[in-house]
Amino acid sequence: MSKARFELYTDIDGEYRWRLVHDNGNILADSGEGYASKQKAKQGIESVKRNVPEASVVEK
Image (cartoon, rainbow, N blue to C red; front, top):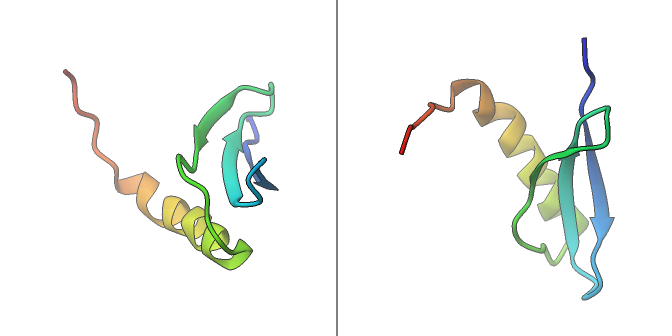
């Protein structure tokens, strides 16, 4: 079983961001935007955790 982890970090502009990293080092997802506070970035992580199991797959 692989283990992914969320990494919370500060970008070059001083904003908080997160990324979901597979245990092999590949980035699976990222916040796509910077957050002004660490708390808002953590809320973004929690939102992904809640919503991903129900995400649909759309083929284009």
